[in-house]
Amino acid sequence: MSKRTDKRPIHVLLVEDNPADAELATEVLHEGPLPKIVHTVEDGLEALSFLRREARFAEAPRPGLIVLDLNMPRLDGRKFLSIVKSDPDLRGIPVVVLTSSEAPKDIDVCYDLQASSCIPKPLDLPSLLGVMTAFESYWFGAAVLPTSGG
Image (cartoon, rainbow, N blue to C red; front, top):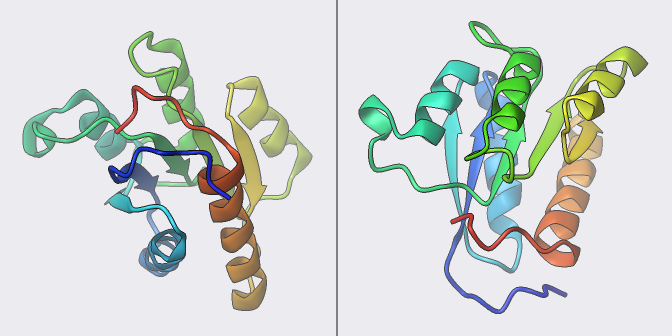
């Protein structure tokens, strides 16, 4: 049951370079009870431009949640997370890392960099659907997101 009474859509920034994973995540996010608008970018550089409202993202809304892949070209998730969490204007946005890595060092780095959550991404579709459904239920059902996010 959602604790959110505001019916405005929640803006989610999905940072994912794999088009199939991005499409699946977007579909699952739209299945939940709360309205969501998912904005997808392919890497950390595009995500920073979105958050800073630069260039083609000049009218971008502030997301209520960021879903972040770790391993991406140009600017990877670790560096992106470090930049976001050191920026006073951005650090309050929850960042959930969704990664194919289950290496303890990768998980530890995510939390060291102040990720709100780190979720290993299963490789098979049924398990991935289960993880994404649980993710949606927690972040948009049980958790309360910051009110300053879209």
